Image (spheres, rainbow, N blue to C red):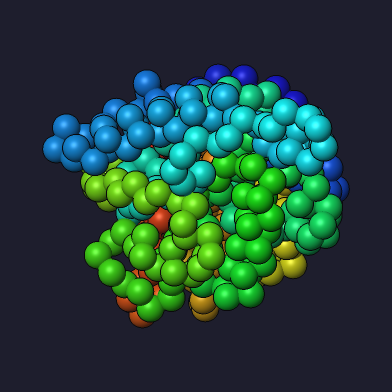
Length: 368
């Protein structure tokens, strides 16, 4: 379906809007592997497109360190494939030694300082074929293990030169141990690592993701990571209003009908539907959707629902899908209790990202 139509060109699209609530996608394991690349929003980012805040020297330092780290990976071999034969073949020359120092970097900073931009830039800058480097969120990595099994995941990723993990989750001890064990196997195979993370529940801290918590939770892996602190404000809010005022139901509905490929759903019903779809499929849930239109946005009723909404917000943000809504503004989605609790940083990230997508959606509404 063409997405070239706009609200200014045609008052009503030929097709009725899509509905996310009518979708129950199934995602095969091979797609999970193939999609371990930076999301569309970060296709074109590079270190040169990252604009450090002149008032935050740690941002410039992080770029310099990561550029050097990527360059250092060019002369190393992961232990998978031919590299493994070099390590273990008797009578053969020894494989080149890995560069001295940590084989991983951890980007330590608050939401909105550009950690994902830098992580994706590292992936792009690493001199290896796309099939030999992987990029995904912690949730996507755990889903891969669930789909392939632990040993097959180790085999699949051991031939990689680099694994980037965005939003390493520290709030589920079982998953943390699982992924830490996986990363230990990959480090032994010669895979370089890079990660960002979320904070532990109850660790309110200072608005950043606490490298000490991350390094403690991954235990034996801590020696493999060099923490890079990245200070700064949420760039999505620099000099911009907080959350744009929502539109009326009629405006949202009209925009959905006038935008080819748009979806239109009642917000409370969508929240109910998300409970029926595994979060690993939220990306597939939005396949082919050019804009998400929501009516009757209201506060989320409970924490489980709120955490599912966080995942959906991440997938929409990754794919640059604008979100047009009626009801309450997005900065009123989560209760005061939620915003003071252990998952507060996830909720603030969701507000930040949905707010950015709401700004992107303003052009969908026809003006007189």
